Structures are given as structure tokens and as C-alpha cells.
Image (cartoon, rainbow, N blue to C red):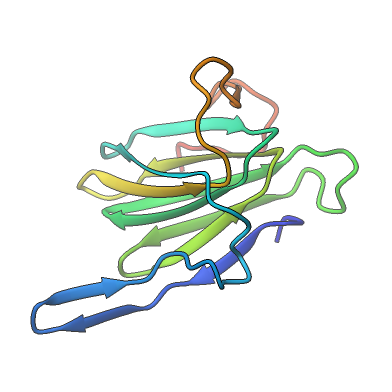
Length: 148
């Protein structure tokens, strides 16, 4: 596991009315602080990658469809420098992945339906000075192939 990345297995509680799933609580070990919650989606086969943040941590889960979440540690001082982590997240495999600052990340919808992702971040989005540093999904030095 990349240094600083944490995974929380999520539990779905069904009853005759539907399902409930707690995603992130302020008494979880994985919780740092609240910035904002947002939803993003990707259509089948679409890749949204790569970027990292210098100021915020992310907490990703997928609540509809299925996503392949990939992480890459480009921090030269890290004990897991150049390591890649790969997760498949869906309601059938529910988890929350904590992505620390400076870790490249991205996801691909690997289901036949649109993947709906919830991200709880530690800082609100700054429209005037976005905390996003991007590289192309395919043309980069990251040892990961989204085509698989």
C-alpha cells in the first residue's frame, strides 16, 4: 500500500425499504477534516486521470456502477516511491479510499453503466486558485495502463 493511503471497507445495510451505507464519519480513523463533498461521474470506458493535490486529501467511493481507481506515488522521499495501487470499487465491493496529498490518482468506469463517485475532500475547491496538478491519462511517466 502506498504510504499514507488508507482503505475503509464499507458495509451496506439492507432492509425491505432499500439500503443504507455509511461512507465517512468524523470518528473514523480515516477522517482528517471536512472541506466539501462532491459527486462526479464517468460514462462506461471513460478515464478521468491523472492529477494530484498539494493542499487537500481525497476520500473516494463509488455508489453506482463500478470504478477502477489507480494511485501513483511520485514523491521521491516516500518509502513507497513509484508504487502503484489499484482498486475496484462498487456497491458489490464497497470501500472508501483515502488519498493523501501529492499522490497521483484517477479512475475509469469499468461497468456498463455510468460510475457515480462521491469524494469527501479536506479543503473546499478554490475556483480562483485550483489545487489540481494534471498530467495526460496516457502520455506520462506513470507505469499504469488504463487500456487494461
